[in-house]
Image (cartoon, rainbow over all chains, first blue to last red; front, side):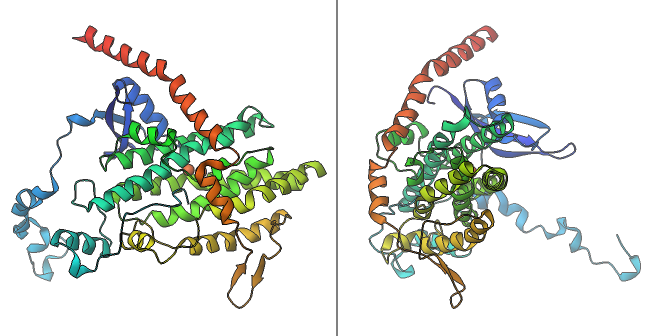
Length: 93
Length: 328
Ligand SMILES: [Fe+2]
Ligand SMILES: [Fe+2]
């Protein structure tokens, strides 16, 4: 398989939903990756649309960068609706 | 099971005090049922053990297609042929999900497959038995996939994220395998000739004990089993799983109107489980060593498939290169 490259597979399970990562396939090119992905991940109507992306095109955050990356949102409670206490008379908002 | 004897390399299971801070943090995550993901820190032993376990599991799925492939061209009807083909295709898929999960640990698929071909990597002992008549397709689906389900359902909760997710996918597909197998047998028992009924009993007689062996020998007190349990890459003991399988299977066996080749098999009111006879572990170890009825044939078939397909892979690579050159 060394001469083939790795593709990540994303499947949209239903119209109106996001594509979701389901796994990966090896293939010589994108067209073959698409066919392999269909055979491997949609044998039982699991999808209405497939994306295949060369794995080496994906930039992922590293787990040790977690703090640098996500901490800034930690202390911003005012971004959540529940932060704003309103009197009961307002009703549902 | 599909990975029957997995070496962890552990001499003894470390207590929390003996662990480095990294190891302790890792173990605490596992204790809290937090999944370990590919980019997380993990002890080398955990990584290596998982590679061994997942590759054995993947090899089992792939080699497991061969006993069934034997009957694909001889299925009694087109309907049965299509069903069997669909089941075998699923097993190919299971192998691929698992090889992918294994690759997230930094293992190389070609290298691991090479180890299988050199006889250095194991796969489940069950696939080294021949499939001699059509009823074997029923018995394999019902018993072998049934045993696999018991094991795989538990592994959905394994600590390694990609392995656990592969198991969830696989479990969704397995119940069709077992049901199609059982239905083959039920049809033969209810509508078949005496000869066909005898084929069913014969298939069960041959596959019963090898199926019970799939769960592996009784776990000893070795650091090996304890380490796998502590890492939660094994979640229930071999004996517990085997008992679950027997308890679930005997009523189905009775419904078929067949018997197991075990005179000691009987319900135990006190324990609420079935008692059963002694398993011939000598046979199990011989099969694992490569001396089962079909070991050599299975590996040869796998090798021939890879070698025979080389020109297809080369052609595909050459075609892709040509397409890229034309596009540039
Ligand atoms: Fe499977
Ligand atoms: Fe299966």
